Amino acid sequence: MPKKSEPQKSDLQSRLAELPAVDELLHEAFRRGLLPRFPRTLVGELVRSQLKTIKDRVVGESLQVKELFSAETFWSAVETALEEFLAANLKPVINATGVVIHTNLGRSPLAAAAVEQIAAVSGRYSNLEYDLETGSRSIRYVNVEALLCRLSGAEAAMVVNNNAGAVLLALSALADGREVVVSRGELVEIGGAFRIPEIVVQGGALLREVGATNRTHLKDYEAAINEETAILLKVHTSNYRLMGFTGQPEVRELVALGRKHGISVVEDLGSGNLLDLKAYGLPGEPTVREVMASGVDLVTFSGDKLLGGPQAGIVVGRRDLVEKLKKHPLNRALRIDKMTLAGLEAVLKCFLDPLTAVEKIPTLKMLTMTEAELKKRAQNLRRAIVRHCQADTRLELKIESSTSRAGGGTMPMVELPTFCLNLRVAGQSSALLEKYLRSRPFPIVVRIVDDWLVFDPRTIFTDEFPEIARACQELVNL
Image 1 (cartoon, one colour):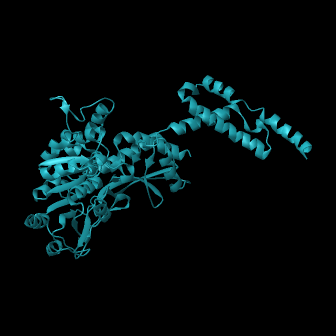
Image 2: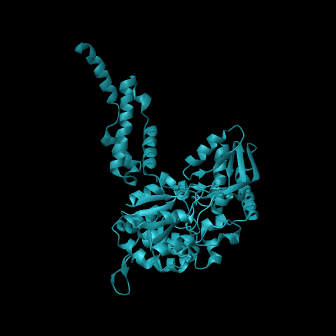
Image 3: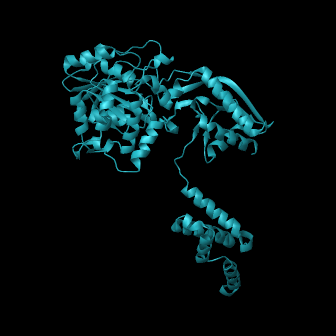
């Protein structure tokens, strides 16, 4: 038997010997400019991987090397693999969905001032925790605390990495081992399946539910208060609404009850609105200043929702309570970095002039666009596509009225009137076209409605119109 297999083995070895050696290929990689353009170790790994694939097929399928190995094909595959491996996984996308605060797409795009400030401090050293006047160590919150107090009317403020973290820190610092009273109608679930009851428990507190899902009375809170009660927690239901026979005590009533019994009242405001949106025809979301004026002891809210800033959890309120949070060990695990602080500071400064804030902060600008503006933007997008595609007869475009969403768990019942550009290509499936758009190097995320691709100009920046036009040309050439 061994003698019969030897010729076969010799034939296989001779075929494999036709493949170039790894060292030879690495010299060729240098000649072709892959080295030092790409890391040498990575080039070596991918050359070996591509070579192994060919060897496996030669052995497994009894093929000739010349059937599988072509220098141009080999190096094209290696270069493509290198580029794909080193391409950024986190990348910009065009949000054409009309969902303004799109959690899956990074929530709020930042104002130009915030982007500039982040760039200024991220590549250099900064005075993150250094007092330039005294030459001594300081705390990072001083960079934004005065701004937050000015805008909210609070005595003190601090910032952690997100709003769930802010609530967790407040409960850990103020209610560890004691009871937190919450209305059943406010035991919400936030993004990522995190629920208020679970955050209360993780904060070391004991949850005390009161009232019913649809109605809770002040007397329910009062009946629950005992010597173990640490906090009356109010959660703004910014991501859903109960309709019909519903009711909750006014915040001022809870504050009076808390003062009567010496118990802190904390409100998780969620969306963190600093601007009165009613002036722009939007339903009233309570502002942070309004909530603080009601007498609440602490308010927590997000930085990347209606505030339009970077991801952050902001706490404003009574100085003595904020100081307890600052000194709590959990605060270090939740603290924010210099980039977040830089972006947040720049965005907060935009709110110093409410009249210009809606122009400077993209989230607010998108939310407050008029129907006339949106229709004009849809028409401009259509013109850009037509110019680029040169009136290709396979491409069908139409502008229709539709609705946008605020997103991000804010204003859940509100439909924002808009005008969308709908597109389809003759003979092409809209599902396949949608998949192609989001698989591009510069992805475009759209909606599909009745087999049309829907582009909502509310969430598309005007400098993205040319890229969409190029993508549409690609669609008709598929």
